Length: 74
Image (cartoon, rainbow, N blue to C red; front, side):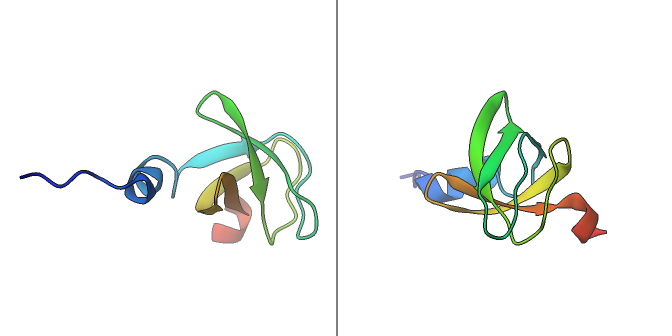
């Protein structure tokens, strides 16, 4: 019997490590929006991220994506 993937592992497969683009300013104390897979997503970060900046999804908190600036990954 094949074990079905959990929602969590599906999320990791489709989101974690993937790139998106910030639509709004996002800072340590301010959530914002990113564009990923044709949709706007709520996001938060410890980095300061400007609109138009490329980001990497590093986690999630329910339906809020946790992101990091690609600049900080270099």
